[in-house]
Image (cartoon, rainbow, N blue to C red; front, side, top):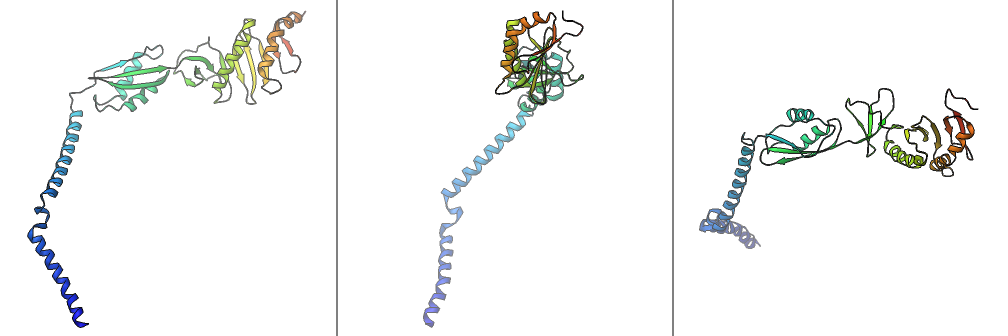
Length: 275
């Protein structure tokens, strides 16, 4: 047993000695050409990429690519050229390569009447701006000082000091309901066409009750939309019987309440008397 233990102890130094002789014989890194070539190729590639990146960065920052022109690709009816120039001077910076297109887009979209903007580079020294303007279809009325407008997508926007468009109909209702009121306005307008009348104001109360003011001053109370008595059915009943009811009343009505199941209540225009 003692001789076996001695043999095992002597084997470890022998193996270490053989490894040392192998390294001395040429098994080291510097004596392996294939490995050296692979590492050198990787170092060369890394250096080439780093040099290219540094060169491009330096090239982009040179004053030889300044922005000299801004091309507006869409016709504008509400946004003035002076407003475009103010955005360019205040928010557009950098050269052809370094300009931040997203920041420029956000700056243009902050202008009154701008619904959406797209900004792209225009070789060799400019940018191209495509602007979608709001198209106002109604005034949004929540108070005497409220001057917001509703666009054709049913979105409320601020006109930015534009003159009040008195020819547009007036919408009023809870915030977030402008699109619903716009859709109903079109339905009301179609239903009233046989009478030659148009809704000049559409009001939706907090209880979801509808009220119209027509272009002749008549106020039409329609009430809430119900499964058994839809608002459009009440309006159809109004258009079918309005002329006859007006002739019987011998006066121009100022308000008609259509919330009754089989009829309506009529109130003459203020200052007029029935005969």
